[in-house]
Image 1 (cartoon, rainbow, N blue to C red):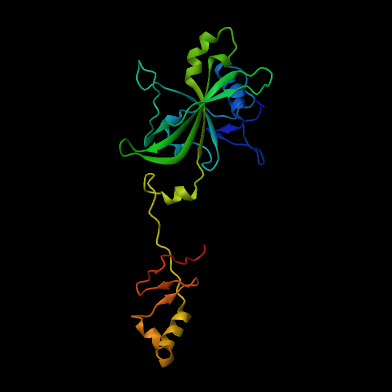
Image 2 (cartoon, rainbow, N blue to C red; image 1 turned 120 degrees about the horizontal axis):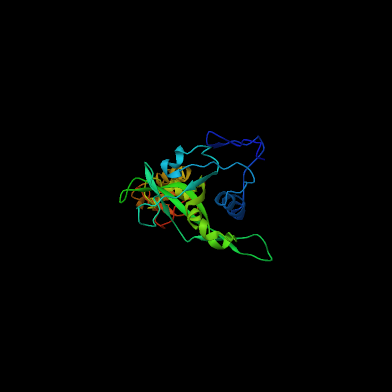
Length: 246
């Protein structure tokens, strides 16, 4: 596999028909652990880049596909433990709880790593706006190394991560909330159905003496298919409207 160059100019390029779809434990145990301990990788397929120097849409690769990167976390402050997750146009913010990643062995399962989910926000607080860009950040934990010299690698383990970046698939609710910062839009007015044939029959009936009882109508009313009457302004006397089916 080392003879194949899958990464060129920071972009993963696979032959037609090939897809890189690793599981969580494969990313942590087969790729991240090998990277931390300078062991041969299964395939040189994940590029190394500082993802926080780029906005998610500017990172190399196909924006419509999941992209994987090795990256090094940098502290926000010299003497602090907080990670600097700011980019030129916004920042990544963690959401939810970190997920434990266990080995795939059924006999002796052990904790290998953790997965953190982050969402990209455009702008700065308090005027930021949430986007559909999602990142899964994978990191090792001490129990996954099983190495006598694990203490020497503790700092490397904290710095090295694998980042999986993709755009969340939108739903109808997401489309309805565009530009509202999560506030649902009010229901749109629904079209009303009028039976114009029934209106004509009522009008012709009112002109004859045999239908004199209908002269008490103050105006022409529409009759819906379920028999409820409509006033001149289109409001139903029974409170029920007939809507067109989508």
